[in-house]
Image 1 (tube, helix red, strand yellow):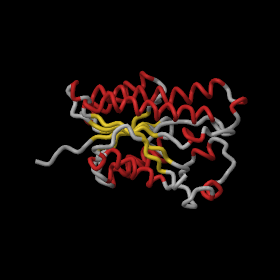
Image 2: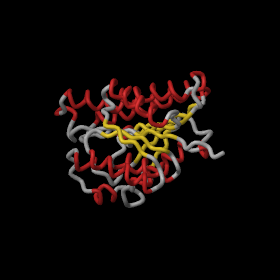
Image 3: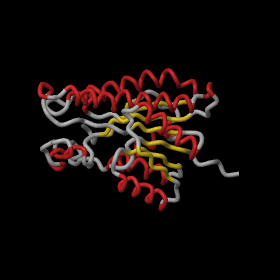
Length: 251
């Protein structure tokens, strides 16, 4: 008897790195659920692409910054697919690029709510479903960080760097709590990647200019970040726990 395909939930899966993770997971045989906020056309394209790869996909309009929406999202995955095997906390925002002294408190609070407490809410819901002690079958979680956690992102978005540093520390602690419950938790820290996030939030440098400062001489393709994320979810990483994997082209 063939085993049931694994189920993955990717937050922020309609565009950029999240989209690449969804497609990579579909290519490896996962059934894919993912959240998006507003771009229904982009979400439908991911569903269609997953279908082309032979995978069933479910697009869920949801705001991970809203705990009620997170609970509803996980219930929808339960109803459609049953047991959850993998979670990727990819959804995140930077806020408008600028100096900290000029940032509005509302921007900082939104970044913390989505990047930190939203990811925590998703992890809590996933652990409740995956934990062997609660009747689950184990699983793997990958939280998405950023090089901003190490650089501090001065003159750009130090609040985002602070949020991602919190994600990395949270990953370390949660990983140690749930490892014996059959759940591996790790973190991935992408370098500058060819997505819309930089131009969308007011960064003036082009991707070519950003790539020139990287030892490899270029920015990452989202598929490269996705490949490393799928590695952390896979059995090949069965002894990798509480680690932040930097995928930054040498930077």
